[in-house]
Picture 1 (cartoon, rainbow, N blue to C red):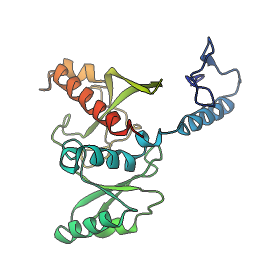
Picture 2 (cartoon, rainbow, N blue to C red; picture 1 turned 180 degrees about the horizontal axis):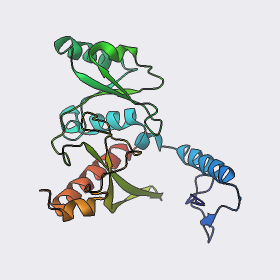
Picture 3 (cartoon, rainbow, N blue to C red; picture 1 turned 60 degrees about the horizontal axis):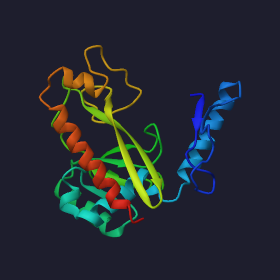
Picture 4 (spheres, one colour; picture 1 turned 90 degrees about the vertical axis):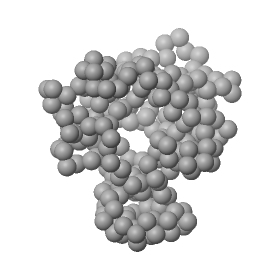
Length: 231
């Protein structure tokens, strides 16, 4: 938490410095954290970045570029709370299934903008906090009956009107608090028998091929960035 760096200047040009990554000189933990927060916020101001990290733009970009049916191949049914046609679709969905489980999501970190709702409770969501509503889909794969999420790490380099995307060849497994909780949380400490990273998962021969998995993740990553390249 005490190392920081930039690949671009405040004007959006490539950083010409010979030492782009350097240790934060401030001694106190609070001051270091504040510096990290300021730089994190700086990165969020990079033009076009909102099309990557904002959930509503991810869905819009995928549907616009590949069609709703193709987007649903790897994204759950998604509805924008500030888009009237999607609100009508939600009303029809709930009218046909009043017990359907939904999740409202926003763009805040550490689950601060996540809310689970049932049926027409979605109408109580604050569209300034939650920007999208998604159907909670059954989990095809679990580990010891516990839901897990795979956190992947990607580096994006933009220069000379070209985007290069690098996908790290491993991923961290994030678990839910218990078997009844479908929402994963980074704060949950994995059990000893649970793999912590994808390479451990593949070593346990759980029925998924490592090469097939990374091939599909590469395709999905490429689709996401292809969908926003023009923006």
